[in-house]
Each structure stands twice: as C-alpha cells, then as structure tokens.
Image (tube, rainbow, N blue to C red):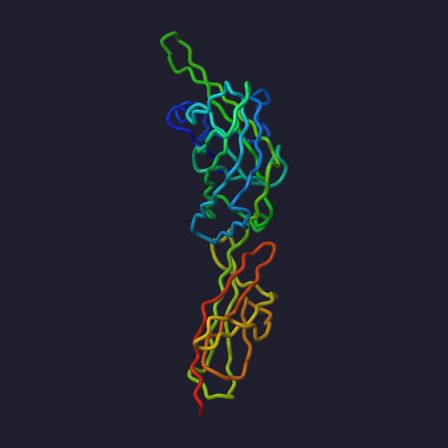
Length: 284
C-alpha cells in the first residue's frame, strides 16, 4: 500500500517510530475520529482506469464531504481524501492513495455541519502500485481521515506523537485494467486488384509483475477496412489471436485503403485499435 506523506512535521515524527508515511494499515484504523460522510464519489469520470507498464496514470476523483462545522482540515496535521482498495477493508490486498491534498469548495452549511464539493488526483504508477494480474479488477473507494498530534518541544524532558487513521469503506468503485497494444501490417504493397492480401498483427497486454507487454491469445479481434478518401471503417471479418497474441488472415484486394485491427477489450484488459496500414491497389 502506497503511503501519503503530509509534510516535514509528520516525516520527522514518524522517523522516530520507523514509519515513512501517513497511512497505517487499515486494520489498525482508529475509531474515535470525527463524524464524516463521503458521498457522490466518482473515480476517473466513471471510466475504467487503463494502465500500461511504465507511465503513471493520473486519475481524477470527485466527491462530496460532509463534516462537523468545528472541524478544520488543514492538510498539515490532518487530511481527508478518497483512496482505492481491493480486498476486505480491515486487511486490503492492495490500496492506492491520492497524490496530495483535496481541493474543496463549500456548497452548503447547517448549524453543525459543512458540506463541500471536493476534487483530488490519484496517480496510479504500475511499477509501485500494481503487482499482479489480480489487480486488474474492480476496486472499491474509501473515504479516509488521518491526523497527527505532535509535541516536539523537549525543553521539559518530554516529547510525544499521536496518530490516528480512519477509513469509511465502499463509498464507490473503480475498475483498473491492463493496457493493450495492437498492430496491423498488410502485404504485399502495392497489390493487384483481385489478388490476396495477408494482414498480420499482434495483440499484447501489460503484465505489471514483469513490466512488459505479453501476448494475449484466444481473443476476438475485428479486421476493419477504410477505403481511401473515406473516414469510415467497416468490419471485414473477426480473427482470433493465436500464440503470443499473433494475428493473421487473408482478404481479396478490391480498392486502395487502410486496414486495421480493433480489440473491444475484456473485463481485465482495455480496448485498443491499431494504426491503419495503407495498401495501394493497382488495376493490373
């Protein structure tokens, strides 16, 4: 589980205890914190989070926070935010926290509460946040509150550090998928009208454990064609990827245009469309 640092004061305090970040395991969360309500949580605008092998994916999160009116969140000694986790709340298999402080705007108040519309960003970094194929699944969102109480004035021969952490689980969901790559190559080029064209390619997907893309076999992939001068692709046939994700099929050459492969995606892998490969068809 990635940790969320909250500045020099916290870093210095936790260095004495051997901790390196804000977040304690969820199983040890405190139960005496403020009464917070997290609602209307939307992760990545409701779309799947598709992650490759190297680039960090910046995921926008919006949510509504209702807090006691006498609770001030300063993002120095206390934090609120939304994290992602999978597995049981008390002992998650993995979790990912936001990159920094939320930005909140007050939308309504009562005598005892303040309601705010909040935004934050969660950076999903494959090399540090995703470890196994099991991470390609539906995650839950949880609202968290953490705080630090520090007395580092040792003039009286005493120092103290108090730390609390709470999570309100299952306030939303987000799907994380493995990114796919897809290629298409039609040959021969050029080709005489009526002759056979072979369109090859490969479907691969990210494997976070190794940091590489590996073949994705036994998947249905559409071969599509767009005539020169047109903007519309039409599906010609469906091809099943073979060993190592290899794709290969044949078609009759009828007119000049572009061939591409299109993969619709699965529950664990994002959709992908290859670049179109132009083939000039001669009259012969």
